[in-house]
Length: 67
Image (cartoon, rainbow, N blue to C red):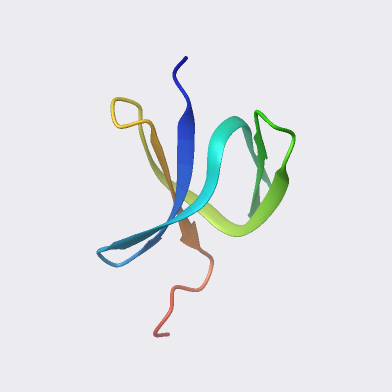
């Protein structure tokens, strides 16, 4: 099974946010994510990039750190 993992992108650093993402949906400035195991999260920001081959979703905060 091809499972995607969501990571928070902070410059060159990427931190794991949610594993085994099943549903990803933009919702008015947030990103809704649900894992295969039913864990739900809402992230205040946007999808920066999806890398299908690497099975990676990169999320970027609305206000990047350092501003």
